[in-house]
Structures are given as C-alpha cells and as structure tokens.
Amino acid sequence: MRILIADDDATSRAMLAGVLKKNGYTVCEAANGAEALAELQQPDAPRLAVLDRVMPVMDGIDVIGRVREIQNTCPPYLIMLTALGSKTDIITGLDAGADDYLSKPFDPGELRARIEVGRRFIETRDALVESRLLLAEKVRELSRALEQIKTLRGIVPICANCKKIRDDAGYWQQVEVYVRSRTEAEFSHGICPECMKKLYPDICNEDGTIA
Image (cartoon, rainbow, N blue to C red; front, side):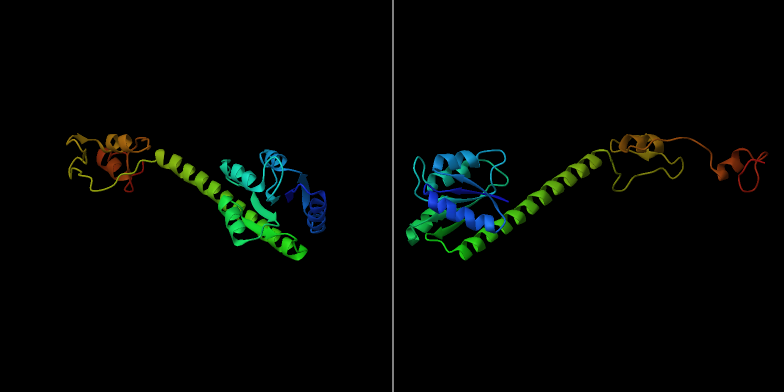
C-alpha cells in the first residue's frame, strides 16, 4: 500500500518514511499542504496519508476538509500527526474529518500500529464496497429477469365445458390466447392420446397411438 507523508520538516518526513518503508509500505512525500492536496486528488491517490497539522500554503486541517469534499466511494484514511496535542486540537482535527490523531514526537511502534489499523479499515471497506457492487449487479440481473417473466396469480375462472378462461374484463378466451397474453409462452398444437381415440377410433390403438 502507498502512503502519503505531508510535513514541511524534512527530518520528520525522513523519520516517518524510514519507519513506514521498514514495515513494507511504499511512501510518497509532500512538503506543504497544497502538494498533499494535489497528490490526494490524483486518480491513483494514496489510500492512506499522514498529515502534519501546521504546514505552509495550506495546513493539515484545510487539506482534510478539501479531501472530504471530494465525492469518492473509497476516500483515503487520514492520520493527523502534530505537536498540537491538546484535547481541543484533537477534537478539531477529528471534526475536520481526520480518521486518527497522533502526537509528535511519535513513537515508531504506535505509528506502525495506527497505520495497521488504517490498513485493515481500508481493506474492510473495500471488501464492503465490492460486496455492494456485486449485490447491485445481482439486483439488476434479477430485475431484468423479472421483466421477462410474467406470472399468473390468483383464481382464474375457467369454463367447465369448453375450458375457455374469463379475463379481467369479463371476456371468455381460449386457454392459449389467455396464457399467451400474460406470459412469454408460445404454443404448438397437437392431439393427446385420449382425443385421438375419440376423434379417430378407426386408426387408433387402445393407448391412443396410430395403428
């Protein structure tokens, strides 16, 4: 996974990059908020970013706010890393849209653990999005199938003698006409064995087959 580090202090960036690379992550860097925002707006933007709170051009709070305005089904996981660690500062960062908050000087073990939390969150969300997309496709397939299927429901009045069916308007129709108008069924005509014996007794066997 590729992670963005945004910090105006080169030493801090180097320390962060070293810890992340050691743990197998790919790192890209930004020296100010504007560079960070531009990186996070790319089609192949990093899925996770560690942003300093105080940066030139645009601070971390503004970057987070702008990123959260972007319509994205898989927005990046944003961790704010700053020396401003009071409760008010933490609340401000989280209210702006940060997913996590880490104070300077950071502990490498804590940074690794919080990055791991972000990675698991991203993977879980990606799996959920994929499941929703698959479900939506199944729903579309079902809708298309239902559009092609017409079913007969309820009580169907049928003449006990001629077997015609009475439609909703009160008209009596041949069975094949009634069914064809309400389903996708097509009919071909033949004669059953019993009718063969009645209609053609001279050429039929007892089982209705032709002699």
